Image (cartoon, rainbow, N blue to C red; front, side, top):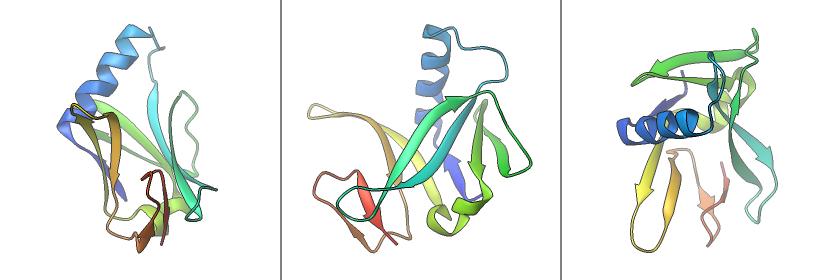
Length: 109
């Protein structure tokens, strides 16, 4: 699995799934899409449809799905959750990034 989920991020995902009453079998889907000032941006959403195109693994009680085609962009990435005074949200610690933008939401590999 190219992507892993920190324990803190998994706790936040579980909280969201419960608060939004998402259906049984919901997975956290991580992906990459074109766009942003550096070329790519991350996508993070919930899904109930997993296919043979996906890699699926469980981290701290949360199932994570990533399409295999994103392996080269995400290999070694850890999805974490940051909760500080200046911002709050999911962060991607991706060792493949060679350039990112000032806002931190897009990257280049």
